[in-house]
Amino acid sequence: MKKGSILFINEKEAKTLITAEEAIKLSEQAFADFSDKKVINPVKLHTPLYPYHDGYTNCMPAFSATQDVAGVKVISVYKNNIKKHDLPATIGTIVLNDPDSGCPLAIMDGTYVTSARTGATMAIFSKYLAKKASEVVTVIGTGAQGLSSVIMILKVLPKIKEVRAVDINPAARKHFIDEASKIYPHVDFVEFDDLQSACTNSDIVVNAANSSVLLLPKIKFNKGTTVLVLEEDLKPSYVKKTFDAFVVDFIDCFVERSNISLNHRHDAYGEEVELVTAESISGEIGDVIAGKKKFRKSDDDIIVASSIGMGIQDVMTADYIYKKALKKNVGKELEFLDL
Ligand SMILES: NC(=O)c1ccc[n+]([C@@H]2O[C@H](COP(=O)([O-])OP(=O)(O)OC[C@H]3O[C@@H](n4cnc5c(N)ncnc54)[C@H](O)[C@@H]3O)[C@@H](O)[C@H]2O)c1
Image (tube, rainbow, N blue to C red):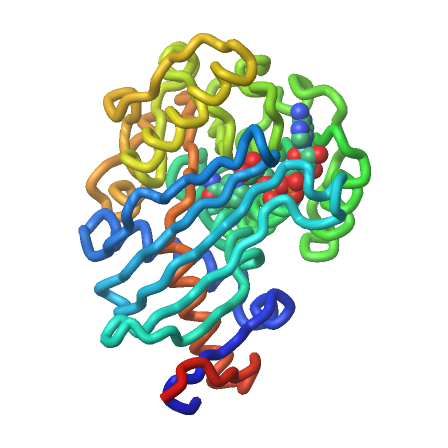
């Protein structure tokens, strides 16, 4: 590449440059490096556009000292995008920078990278927190993140025999089953209408629904269940009475972001505000990966784990794709700086 040029990599290209296994490995490394204080990952800057527009944008910069990679993801979540614009709900852009000069190296997809690293997080939570003999997974919300989660979880828990799909949109449920069963033809994919029936005797429950109504408090979980959460607001009193441990990816970010969201729930729906504190959280997944902590003490524990999402996962995943693109001559070189 010419000095001052950038590489442009679109979503279609990004999808061809990383496997599920590679995405899991990169996020696992990102969490472990975060635990070892080898990354700079500020709390994400959350910009809600309510009440003017029905969505928000997050800005997520990060640097890894072990990989020497730097960049920033800008990501939007507009829950009604599919219905309103026939566009994905979650859309992102990543800028990678040369950590030595700050010079931009790539402007690239952040939509596929987000679903890949989010699914990877669900797989890592499952690998370190779920019962080893887990056989049944329930996915609530079978959109982009739900699909990626199941694809990744089945890579780390090959004993899974049954996947239950719950979604208020039958088309999303069908798409999920069509796509996932192409990759895992030996697994039984079953559609469920009733939330409780879908979760009863399920070893892992993933809540990837973008519901404005809280779903988890409506469910009674069996002993031993591992509940994985993408965006449901987890009030400390509910967590305390329901779960034996509460694990997140990034405590400071989780606390800040949850409280913004709980205050929003108060303004929008009149719900009582019950703020999340760091003390209500058992710990971070990076500490489990690094062998510093262990949260599942027995096969009877009911554990909840929630991901707020970390820029370092995006930047490390994007850098991997960028380097692969350079090697395989994929993407478009664009003149950028006027040198
Ligand atoms: N923590 C993270 O790192 C992270 C990353 C990306 C997205 N997210 C969150 O994940 C959620 C899903 O994002 P997505 O990109 O998959 O969106 P999506 O629109 O593709 O999928 C969401 C699905 O949830 C379904 N749904 C909504 N209400 C439901 C209900 N009450 N019961 C069952 N299903 C219901 C919708 O029909 C839809 O199919 C969003 O809330 C988003 O903010 C979190």
